[in-house]
Image (cartoon, rainbow, N blue to C red; front, side, top):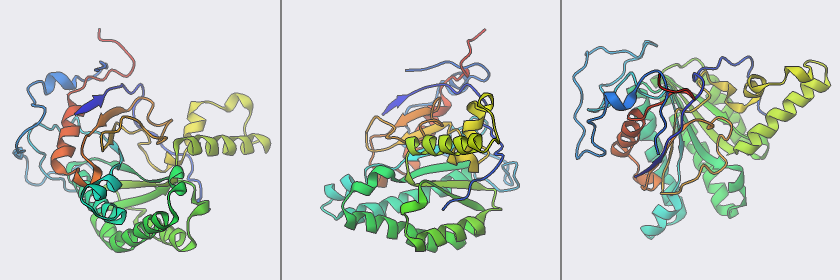
Length: 309
Protein backbone atom coordinates (compact mmCIF):
# COMPACT_ATOMS: atom_id res chain seq x y z
CA UNK A 1 0.00 0.00 0.00
CA UNK A 2 1.42 3.35 -0.99
CA UNK A 3 1.13 6.44 1.15
CA UNK A 4 2.53 9.96 1.26
CA UNK A 5 2.76 12.04 4.40
CA UNK A 6 2.63 15.77 5.00
CA UNK A 7 2.02 17.86 8.11
CA UNK A 8 -0.74 20.37 8.88
CA UNK A 9 0.63 23.74 10.09
CA UNK A 10 -2.58 25.06 11.66
CA UNK A 11 -5.32 23.60 13.76
CA UNK A 12 -8.12 22.16 11.64
CA UNK A 13 -10.79 24.50 12.93
CA UNK A 14 -12.60 27.23 11.07
CA UNK A 15 -15.75 29.08 12.08
CA UNK A 16 -17.36 30.29 8.84
CA UNK A 17 -18.45 33.90 8.84
CA UNK A 18 -21.08 33.28 6.21
CA UNK A 19 -22.52 30.59 4.00
CA UNK A 20 -22.78 31.43 0.33
CA UNK A 21 -25.96 30.51 -1.45
CA UNK A 22 -25.87 28.12 -4.40
CA UNK A 23 -27.59 29.12 -7.71
CA UNK A 24 8.14 9.23 3.29
CA UNK A 25 7.40 10.47 6.96
CA UNK A 26 7.21 13.99 8.26
CA UNK A 27 7.54 14.75 11.98
CA UNK A 28 5.20 17.16 13.69
CA UNK A 29 5.30 18.81 17.11
CA UNK A 30 2.68 18.15 19.75
CA UNK A 31 1.56 14.53 20.02
CA UNK A 32 3.50 11.58 18.63
CA UNK A 33 1.35 9.06 16.80
CA UNK A 34 4.16 6.65 15.93
CA UNK A 35 5.29 6.11 19.53
CA UNK A 36 1.75 5.30 20.62
CA UNK A 37 1.19 2.77 17.86
CA UNK A 38 4.69 1.57 17.04
CA UNK A 39 3.69 -2.06 17.45
CA UNK A 40 0.66 -1.81 15.14
CA UNK A 41 0.97 -4.20 12.15
CA UNK A 42 0.53 -2.83 8.66
CA UNK A 43 -2.32 -5.19 7.99
CA UNK A 44 -4.17 -7.64 10.19
CA UNK A 45 -6.07 -10.76 9.21
CA UNK A 46 -8.94 -9.55 11.38
CA UNK A 47 -9.75 -6.60 13.61
CA UNK A 48 -10.91 -7.31 17.17
CA UNK A 49 -12.87 -4.69 19.03
CA UNK A 50 -11.34 -2.84 21.94
CA UNK A 51 -13.01 -3.06 25.33
CA UNK A 52 -14.70 0.26 25.99
CA UNK A 53 -17.36 1.89 28.10
CA UNK A 54 -20.73 0.61 26.97
CA UNK A 55 -22.38 4.02 26.81
CA UNK A 56 -19.59 5.93 25.06
CA UNK A 57 -20.38 9.27 23.40
CA UNK A 58 -18.40 11.49 21.06
CA UNK A 59 -18.75 14.76 22.96
CA UNK A 60 -21.70 15.84 20.82
CA UNK A 61 -24.15 13.56 22.59
CA UNK A 62 -24.09 10.88 19.89
CA UNK A 63 -23.21 7.29 20.75
CA UNK A 64 -20.12 5.94 19.04
CA UNK A 65 -19.08 2.34 18.51
CA UNK A 66 -16.04 0.61 19.92
CA UNK A 67 -13.02 0.95 17.65
CA UNK A 68 -11.20 -1.88 15.90
CA UNK A 69 -8.11 -3.02 17.78
CA UNK A 70 -5.11 -0.74 17.29
CA UNK A 71 -7.05 2.43 16.54
CA UNK A 72 -6.99 5.29 19.03
CA UNK A 73 -10.01 7.53 19.47
CA UNK A 74 -7.74 10.42 20.48
CA UNK A 75 -5.84 10.15 17.19
CA UNK A 76 -8.89 9.79 14.96
CA UNK A 77 -8.95 12.40 12.15
CA UNK A 78 -11.70 14.97 12.42
CA UNK A 79 -12.07 15.27 8.63
CA UNK A 80 -11.54 12.52 6.07
CA UNK A 81 -11.73 13.20 2.32
CA UNK A 82 -12.05 10.48 -0.31
CA UNK A 83 -11.47 10.35 -4.06
CA UNK A 84 -13.75 7.43 -4.94
CA UNK A 85 -11.90 6.13 -7.99
CA UNK A 86 -12.22 2.90 -9.93
CA UNK A 87 -15.94 2.25 -10.42
CA UNK A 88 -15.59 1.91 -14.20
CA UNK A 89 -12.56 -0.36 -14.02
CA UNK A 90 -14.30 -2.52 -11.41
CA UNK A 91 -17.24 -2.98 -13.79
CA UNK A 92 -15.02 -3.71 -16.81
CA UNK A 93 -13.07 -6.34 -14.89
CA UNK A 94 -16.34 -8.12 -14.17
CA UNK A 95 -17.73 -7.73 -17.68
CA UNK A 96 -20.43 -5.36 -16.45
CA UNK A 97 -21.61 -1.95 -17.72
CA UNK A 98 -20.14 1.14 -16.10
CA UNK A 99 -23.47 1.79 -14.39
CA UNK A 100 -23.01 -1.39 -12.33
CA UNK A 101 -19.70 -0.06 -11.05
CA UNK A 102 -21.27 3.22 -9.98
CA UNK A 103 -24.10 1.36 -8.23
CA UNK A 104 -21.52 -0.72 -6.37
CA UNK A 105 -19.65 2.47 -5.48
CA UNK A 106 -22.75 3.85 -3.76
CA UNK A 107 -22.78 0.78 -1.50
CA UNK A 108 -19.15 1.41 -0.54
CA UNK A 109 -19.96 5.03 0.25
CA UNK A 110 -22.91 4.00 2.39
CA UNK A 111 -20.64 1.73 4.44
CA UNK A 112 -17.99 4.44 4.89
CA UNK A 113 -20.60 6.96 6.03
CA UNK A 114 -21.81 4.46 8.60
CA UNK A 115 -18.29 3.74 9.86
CA UNK A 116 -17.39 7.43 10.13
CA UNK A 117 -20.50 8.03 12.21
CA UNK A 118 -19.73 5.07 14.45
CA UNK A 119 -16.07 5.92 15.00
CA UNK A 120 -16.45 9.61 15.80
CA UNK A 121 -15.11 11.14 12.57
CA UNK A 122 -16.85 14.49 12.26
CA UNK A 123 -16.60 15.34 8.54
CA UNK A 124 -16.44 13.10 5.46
CA UNK A 125 -15.96 14.80 2.08
CA UNK A 126 -16.28 12.70 -1.07
CA UNK A 127 -15.48 13.57 -4.68
CA UNK A 128 -18.61 12.39 -6.47
CA UNK A 129 -18.47 14.24 -9.80
CA UNK A 130 -15.75 16.60 -11.04
CA UNK A 131 -16.03 19.49 -13.47
CA UNK A 132 -13.89 17.40 -15.82
CA UNK A 133 -16.44 14.57 -15.71
CA UNK A 134 -18.81 16.63 -17.87
CA UNK A 135 -16.75 15.57 -20.92
CA UNK A 136 -17.68 11.91 -20.41
CA UNK A 137 -20.30 10.33 -22.69
CA UNK A 138 -23.71 11.94 -22.12
CA UNK A 139 -25.32 8.63 -21.28
CA UNK A 140 -22.85 8.10 -18.42
CA UNK A 141 -23.19 11.67 -17.17
CA UNK A 142 -26.98 11.39 -17.19
CA UNK A 143 -26.78 8.11 -15.30
CA UNK A 144 -24.42 9.51 -12.67
CA UNK A 145 -26.63 12.51 -12.02
CA UNK A 146 -29.77 10.36 -11.87
CA UNK A 147 -28.00 7.94 -9.51
CA UNK A 148 -27.00 10.81 -7.25
CA UNK A 149 -30.55 12.16 -7.26
CA UNK A 150 -31.99 8.72 -6.55
CA UNK A 151 -29.53 8.13 -3.70
CA UNK A 152 -30.41 11.47 -2.09
CA UNK A 153 -34.12 10.67 -2.23
CA UNK A 154 -33.61 7.17 -0.85
CA UNK A 155 -31.29 8.16 1.98
CA UNK A 156 -32.74 11.53 3.05
CA UNK A 157 -34.91 10.16 5.84
CA UNK A 158 -32.12 7.86 6.99
CA UNK A 159 -29.72 10.80 7.12
CA UNK A 160 -32.20 12.78 9.19
CA UNK A 161 -32.80 10.00 11.69
CA UNK A 162 -29.14 9.03 12.05
CA UNK A 163 -27.93 12.59 12.68
CA UNK A 164 -26.04 13.08 9.42
CA UNK A 165 -25.85 16.56 7.95
CA UNK A 166 -25.56 16.77 4.16
CA UNK A 167 -23.76 19.59 2.36
CA UNK A 168 -23.25 19.77 -1.41
CA UNK A 169 -20.39 21.83 -2.87
CA UNK A 170 -19.51 22.61 -6.47
CA UNK A 171 -20.69 24.56 -9.51
CA UNK A 172 -24.45 24.10 -9.51
CA UNK A 173 -25.04 26.03 -12.75
CA UNK A 174 -25.05 22.87 -14.90
CA UNK A 175 -27.09 20.67 -12.59
CA UNK A 176 -30.68 19.71 -13.49
CA UNK A 177 -33.42 21.77 -11.85
CA UNK A 178 -34.90 18.70 -10.18
CA UNK A 179 -31.55 17.87 -8.60
CA UNK A 180 -31.05 21.43 -7.38
CA UNK A 181 -34.44 21.35 -5.68
CA UNK A 182 -33.63 18.06 -4.02
CA UNK A 183 -30.23 19.32 -2.84
CA UNK A 184 -31.90 22.30 -1.17
CA UNK A 185 -34.43 20.02 0.49
CA UNK A 186 -31.81 17.58 1.81
CA UNK A 187 -29.57 20.35 3.12
CA UNK A 188 -32.49 22.05 4.84
CA UNK A 189 -33.80 18.79 6.31
CA UNK A 190 -30.45 17.79 7.80
CA UNK A 191 -28.94 21.18 8.67
CA UNK A 192 -29.26 20.73 12.44
CA UNK A 193 -27.70 17.25 12.53
CA UNK A 194 -24.37 16.99 14.34
CA UNK A 195 -23.28 13.33 14.38
CA UNK A 196 -21.45 13.50 11.02
CA UNK A 197 -21.28 16.04 8.22
CA UNK A 198 -21.18 14.44 4.78
CA UNK A 199 -19.93 16.89 2.15
CA UNK A 200 -20.51 15.73 -1.42
CA UNK A 201 -18.50 17.48 -4.14
CA UNK A 202 -20.56 17.54 -7.36
CA UNK A 203 -19.49 19.42 -10.49
CA UNK A 204 -16.52 20.48 -8.37
CA UNK A 205 -12.82 21.11 -8.85
CA UNK A 206 -10.18 22.68 -6.67
CA UNK A 207 -9.34 25.27 -9.33
CA UNK A 208 -13.01 26.19 -9.67
CA UNK A 209 -13.23 26.66 -5.90
CA UNK A 210 -10.26 29.05 -5.77
CA UNK A 211 -11.49 31.00 -8.81
CA UNK A 212 -14.99 31.45 -7.42
CA UNK A 213 -13.50 32.60 -4.10
CA UNK A 214 -11.34 35.17 -5.91
CA UNK A 215 -14.33 36.44 -7.87
CA UNK A 216 -16.33 36.84 -4.69
CA UNK A 217 -13.50 38.78 -3.06
CA UNK A 218 -13.10 40.94 -6.18
CA UNK A 219 -16.81 41.80 -6.09
CA UNK A 220 -16.54 42.81 -2.44
CA UNK A 221 -13.50 44.96 -3.21
CA UNK A 222 -15.28 46.54 -6.18
CA UNK A 223 -18.22 47.42 -3.94
CA UNK A 224 -15.89 48.96 -1.37
CA UNK A 225 -16.65 46.36 1.29
CA UNK A 226 -12.98 45.42 1.66
CA UNK A 227 -9.62 47.00 0.89
CA UNK A 228 -6.57 45.45 -0.80
CA UNK A 229 -4.79 45.08 2.52
CA UNK A 230 -7.75 43.08 3.88
CA UNK A 231 -7.08 40.20 1.48
CA UNK A 232 -5.25 37.35 3.20
CA UNK A 233 -5.43 33.58 3.57
CA UNK A 234 -8.20 33.78 6.13
CA UNK A 235 -10.41 35.85 3.82
CA UNK A 236 -9.87 33.43 0.94
CA UNK A 237 -10.71 30.47 3.17
CA UNK A 238 -13.96 32.13 4.17
CA UNK A 239 -14.94 32.29 0.49
CA UNK A 240 -14.08 28.68 -0.37
CA UNK A 241 -17.00 26.30 -0.65
CA UNK A 242 -15.79 24.37 2.38
CA UNK A 243 -16.89 27.33 4.50
CA UNK A 244 -19.93 25.12 5.17
CA UNK A 245 -18.03 23.18 7.84
CA UNK A 246 -16.19 23.90 11.06
CA UNK A 247 -13.33 21.64 9.87
CA UNK A 248 -12.55 22.65 6.27
CA UNK A 249 -9.08 21.08 6.06
CA UNK A 250 -9.03 17.28 5.66
CA UNK A 251 -6.67 15.55 8.04
CA UNK A 252 -6.57 12.48 5.80
CA UNK A 253 -7.18 12.05 2.06
CA UNK A 254 -7.81 8.55 0.74
CA UNK A 255 -7.66 7.78 -2.96
CA UNK A 256 -8.54 4.36 -4.26
CA UNK A 257 -7.59 2.43 -7.45
CA UNK A 258 -3.81 2.87 -7.16
CA UNK A 259 -3.67 6.29 -8.84
CA UNK A 260 -1.14 8.65 -7.24
CA UNK A 261 -2.61 12.12 -7.74
CA UNK A 262 -5.19 14.44 -6.20
CA UNK A 263 -6.97 15.18 -9.50
CA UNK A 264 -7.94 18.80 -8.91
CA UNK A 265 -9.73 18.04 -5.62
CA UNK A 266 -9.70 20.52 -2.70
CA UNK A 267 -6.39 21.98 -3.87
CA UNK A 268 -6.25 24.77 -1.29
CA UNK A 269 -7.62 22.64 1.54
CA UNK A 270 -5.24 19.72 0.96
CA UNK A 271 -2.08 21.80 1.39
CA UNK A 272 -0.90 19.82 4.44
CA UNK A 273 -3.26 16.85 4.44
CA UNK A 274 -1.93 13.34 5.07
CA UNK A 275 -2.30 11.25 1.88
CA UNK A 276 -3.11 7.55 1.61
CA UNK A 277 -3.29 5.74 -1.73
CA UNK A 278 -5.09 2.41 -1.78
CA UNK A 279 -4.71 -0.19 -4.51
CA UNK A 280 -8.31 -1.37 -4.20
CA UNK A 281 -10.92 -0.07 -6.62
CA UNK A 282 -13.59 1.96 -4.85
CA UNK A 283 -16.32 -0.74 -4.85
CA UNK A 284 -13.83 -3.08 -3.16
CA UNK A 285 -12.84 -0.54 -0.50
CA UNK A 286 -14.52 -1.58 2.75
CA UNK A 287 -14.08 -1.65 6.51
CA UNK A 288 -10.76 -3.52 6.48
CA UNK A 289 -9.21 -1.09 3.97
CA UNK A 290 -10.55 1.91 5.90
CA UNK A 291 -9.02 0.59 9.10
CA UNK A 292 -5.69 0.22 7.30
CA UNK A 293 -5.82 3.83 6.10
CA UNK A 294 -6.69 5.09 9.57
CA UNK A 295 -3.96 2.93 11.12
CA UNK A 296 -1.40 4.40 8.72
CA UNK A 297 -2.59 7.91 9.57
CA UNK A 298 -2.38 7.29 13.30
CA UNK A 299 1.20 6.00 13.09
CA UNK A 300 2.47 9.21 11.53
CA UNK A 301 4.23 11.95 13.46
CA UNK A 302 2.89 15.43 12.74
CA UNK A 303 4.45 18.64 14.00
CA UNK A 304 2.61 21.38 12.08
CA UNK A 305 5.71 22.75 10.37
CA UNK A 306 7.79 22.86 13.56
CA UNK A 307 10.68 20.79 14.89
CA UNK A 308 11.12 18.41 17.76
CA UNK A 309 12.78 20.13 20.71
